[in-house]
Image 1 (cartoon, rainbow, N blue to C red):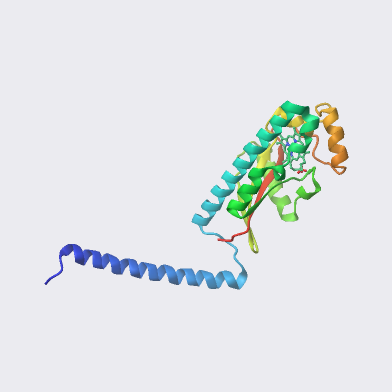
Image 2: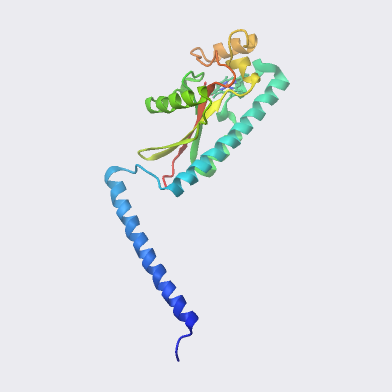
Length: 211
Ligand code: HEC
C-alpha cells in the first residue's frame, strides 16, 4: 500500500521539524556553555521583551495603587497624615505582585528620602542618563540589567502632579506640617526642592528567577 501525498508531505515536514529542533538544541547547549563560563550576561530579544513588559505592568499597577492610597490619605487627613502613605512597601498589592512574580519592588532616587532608597554606583549611571533625557524632553525607556544572578528592571518616575510638591517641592510649596512630620521621621531627607516634570526617582524591580 503506497503512502498518500499528504502523508509523504507530513512525514517530510516532521523530519524537517525534528532537524530544526535538533539544531535549536545544539544552539541552546552551545549558549548554555558560554553562559556558565562567564555568567549570564545577555538576554535574547524574546526574553528582553518579556521582562520589559512584565516590569512595565508591575510598575504601572504599583504606581496606580500608590497614587490611590496617597490621594485617599490626603483627602481624609491632609498631607501631614499622608506622610505615611507615599510608601510602596506598605501596600498589599506590592506584596501580592512580589509573590506572584517572585520579584522585589522598590523606588530608588539620587535625592532620596528613605535611606533604603539610595542608588548604587551602577544605578547612578542609569539615573543620570534618565535625568539628561527628561531635561531635553526625550523619551526615557525602561532598562533591563543583568547583575550576576538577578535581572533588574528600571523605569523613570517623573514628578508629574502638583500634589507631589506638598512633600517634595521647594520650601514655599511644602506643606509646613507635613514637612515637620517628614523631618522627624527622615532626618537625612534629601527629597525636596523638586519641580514639576523633573525626574524624581526610578522604579526598581528585581526578578529573582533568572530566565
Ligand atoms: C504627603 C507627603 C507626600 C506626597 C504628597 C508625596 N510623597 Fe513621595 N514620599 C513621601 C515620603 C514620606 C516618602 C518616603 C517613603 C518611604 O519611607 O519609603 C516618599 C518617597 C518617595 C519616593 C521614593 C524615593 C525616596 O525618596 O525615598 C518617590 C519616588 C516619591 N516619593 C515620589 C512621589 C511622587 C511622584 C509624588 C506625587 C505623585 C509623591 N511622592 C507625593 C511623602 C510624600
